[in-house]
Amino acid sequence: MARASHGVAEAIREEAPPGLFAISAQPALERIPLDHADRCRRERISPDGWKRADIALAFITGKTIVMDVRTTNTQCASASSAGSVTAYLRGQERAKNAKYADYYRDFRPFVIDLGGAVSEDSFGALKHIMGEAAKANAPRLHWERLDWAVRAQRRIAVAMVRTTAWIATRAPVHEAATGHGARHLRPACPGPGG
Image (tube, rainbow, N blue to C red):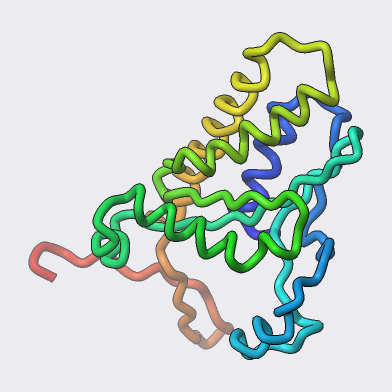
């Protein structure tokens, strides 16, 4: 499981009541649409090599919800050209739906910005998941599923910010050969004007 999808799965696991669902990575396709061969031809992949979604949550109620996670940078040039951040995130969600929705009975895209922000639809995916968790663990108060979704989103946002900070602050390691083998060196920080 990729880093972002793993973070989303862990946040859901931590905030929902235990024992209500099993989480698996890259679930098998639940159905094959009639235009599957055409889609594969357009993507230039084998019909057997169609990429699977990231996460499946199989609930004790018998329902399975499938998600695909996409991280994006809403500060990039393509996001700016979309007109608004909301339009950009919705476009990313539409692309995920176009790719996966016909292959799974209950598919939800989850698009998250590197700063932890999500659209209403992506947050709706968390609410949908937590709603199913509440059904599986009934009786529950009407507000509990929403609290679980908010808490999961907070965990995901913090994980994204931590990951982004880690990426931004790590220095590449360069190897230099010496008489006693290779050793790892960090590049010197450039001085003023350099």
